[in-house]
Length: 610
Image 1 (tube, rainbow, N blue to C red):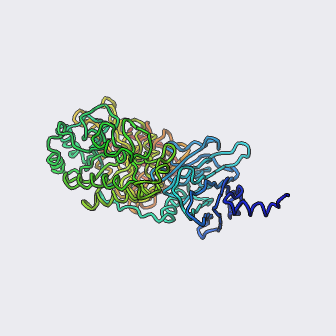
Image 2 (cartoon, helix red, strand yellow; image 1 turned 180 degrees about the vertical axis):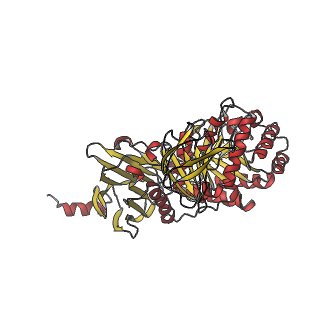
Image 3 (tube, helix red, strand yellow; image 1 turned 30 degrees about the vertical axis):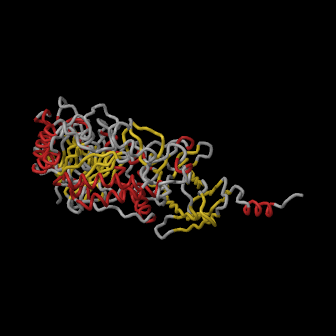
């Protein structure tokens, strides 16, 4: 006997084996949206879509089951014609490349990346930005690129692609922004939307989060000691640096890198005979003291390794370190207890918390076989969120204005709840990567302080050439990792000037309106401004920079690698010329239109308001 399709579907649904779901959804302003689920099982899907007052569109997807069950993997696919779409913006470190859909995969989660992707047209215009409200669990952008067969841009978001604890309901929202606006505004709006939709509360940002920093990492790596750090900080303080971050090495006598000795978090008394007294000597110089910790690692050579056996999130080892599972309350209590004690006993001003993005599965969830034994939270995403909230609470209970730094890639919307400093991922010597990473994070990170990767250059270079490292990162808080005692005096003179410049103009540089231009060219021009002044960085030779004399003082920084700037003025004006030490070197009277102005490498022009 043959069963009708309707009866068959009903029987499958009753048996919990519902047929594959594929549903086209009408979303205002979006050409093609398809919801698909290969095996819905007992889950029922519902959708609703609407045009919003700001001109964007939103899609809400809800799943419900009668009893708690593992949620099904499902996807949402979007296709739009590739018309005047040339570049892709994403959380990838070098994101400008427009990739084909079959190798354009991205993924985000609480501890990695931003759950939105944008596509950029001519003159830096937004063409479509797709954002997702899921800021904790893993979201895979299985496609986010050009579809060669259809000449479209294809975006496919996949949900529940890794183990997830049983749920009885789930809801997610998608936002589609096709407004013809500056792409950076679309990215910033997407970030705000995710923050609001996911009900995230960004951490307050104390003023010192924007101060210039001395970091020990590139200058020392693990080979540090109290006397060496104090000698370097004495130089750093004279130059205007206000914070020191003491990186890996304080907790071990080993200099071989890796993480086999992490997890006990006891001071190496060979390196620091009296750690508290050492920190007080740094405080006496007028500097804040931050200390590095690797959040999830317990090293295989640590005393705590045996204590936490069976409490690792996977069998993976990273440089001799195993990854703790925050679903165990003992793990969260241990980590928070270590940080609270360190903050109190040593009078720390903050912490650099590293490797949070390693808290994820490398295969099957080991908790399933153990029926979640010992774990008071079943979802790894929820447990990581709980851990980081507890960490922030433990640190700020001791020092309310503590500085907490995270490093790319764990710099997304959810991470703003726990930290107040986001640093560009390591790119030593690469001014283009540093500049573009800072710009991308500035667009997507709201009021959270964005920091450069630490600066290091060769002291035998010309100071005006080396100034390019600073000027390429000056729209973020700058971190230095030179060996200052051996840095030539002319380089230190240059550094002192630019540190003083960045402090004097901090409001415009770091707190004002921000616009990086030329996304497809890795931002050859960046500008920031407030009501009083406008600061423009030029990073490519012979780039024409439009100058609108609008009542602000205008500073044009020459990081182009040439000895001139090319300006397009809307009215005649006068520019005062400065070298890289801040010394004046003349004036130029300029006509309206295009002018070539001789400007020292690493120097700048100042055009005063009329």
